[in-house]
Amino acid sequence: MINIETGQITFNNRLIVDSKMDFSELNRNTKDFEKEYSDLKNGWEWLRLRNIKTDKTDYFVSIAFYNKKIAMIEFGIEKNYAEWNLESENERKKEHDLWLSKTIGQNRIFSWGKIESEFDKKAGYSSIVINYNRLKTGGNNV
Image (cartoon, rainbow, N blue to C red; front, top):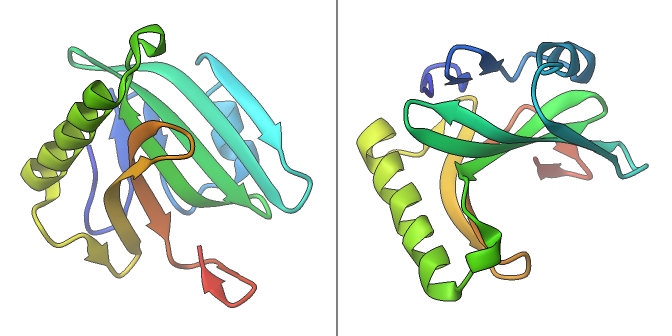
């Protein structure tokens, strides 16, 4: 699913996301997926994809672009938010941690960027985040 040499991620052989893709290419490649688009009007754009099926697991995938280039991919196990509670979200974070450990091991920093499991307290959800380090904005790595 994740190529640790390149940072390319593949979901079910239908969705392949590579850091070299630009917004228009990825937008074309996701035309058959349920998606939502957001333009923050500051160089940042988001594509959010739902119900990406891989084996028996459904994922959500959010892709952030800065100046039309992929800066970050965020994904996680799709859950029913009508039944959300902190305990189940902590469990999902643990599932993500375990998945990362099994999939890529403990080293999570690579020449192309880094990957980590996060819990966003403000938004109230857990996800796996890939940050590509080839883009710079205001002196900070993206």
